[in-house]
Length: 239
Image 1 (cartoon, rainbow, N blue to C red):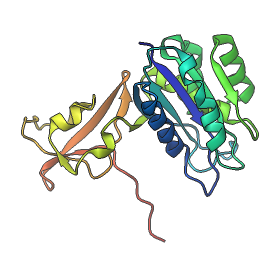
Image 2 (image 1 turned 90 degrees about the vertical axis):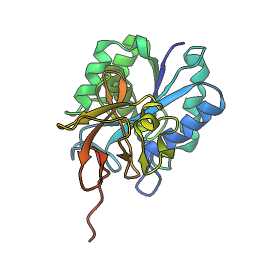
Image 3 (image 1 turned 45 degrees about the vertical axis):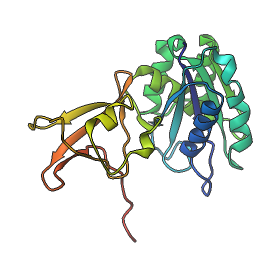
């Protein structure tokens, strides 16, 4: 079965839910349509005053493995267009994972570290035969949409914000509860992991995309007597 990537960006405004929320809604519809949804990665792009963005300048990539090709996810364009917030500049990109060329991967990497142009995104997509659409506003969302596809295709950028069962994990679980989700545990430090070890999720598990698979780095905590995720949720300071 082909792996299909759906990149989306700039679907929100300053008061609406973020692009990640919309991506999870799309993920749920893909499940309802039996398109075998695999996961969603959040992709971070450059935060710079020269770039118009709503909050953190991040895009999302929804990954599915349907029996058919890209045509079965064509509804994603209308899905995003109908649900994008007023005043947003949404873009959507659909591509087969095995058809994403190195040039698009390189574009995603550049978008994470430097200012890139909308015209370049559109030209790259056209040359690669990748479906990339601007769905309103200034149309700048095509940059993050294509960049999200490129970064996910590169296999070493972003974090999974959704995997089937990921958000259902309890606070303290065993290793099998995590690995059965398709997540590889990466143990940091000198302690050798044991089969009966406990892993504390802290209510926020976001595996990294490494070598094309979800990987959760963990470190042992004597205080918690458990392995804790290395990546923790950031809490805004109280004013």
